[in-house]
Length: 110
View: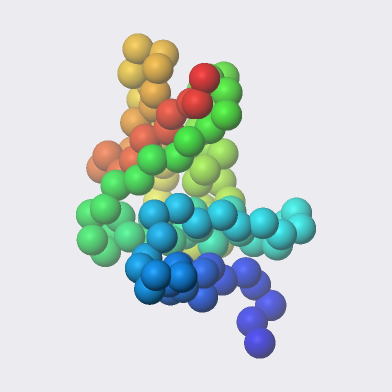
C-alpha cells in the first residue's frame, strides 16, 4: 500500500449511470497529500498533452501569489529544474507560466 495520497481511484470512478462525473470532491485530513497529488497531475497533463488548467481561489488577494502557492508544493519534489512565474492580467486573473510556456490560469470566485 502506498504511503501517499493518490487520486487515481477517484478519477477512474464512474457515477451511478456509468458516466464520468464532471466534478469530483475530495476530502481528508490536512497534510494527506491531496494538493500535491492534483498539482502534479495538472502539471504532468500540461507537459505530456499540453492541457492547460485553471486553479480557482476563494479570494482575489490570493491571485497575487498563485504561481508560488500552486507550484510550491511540487517544485522541489518533482520539478526542481523548472520555474513557474505569473503575469497578472488587469488584476482580474493570473496567467501561470511554466518554463516560459503558458500552462494555466488562476482566478478568484469573488
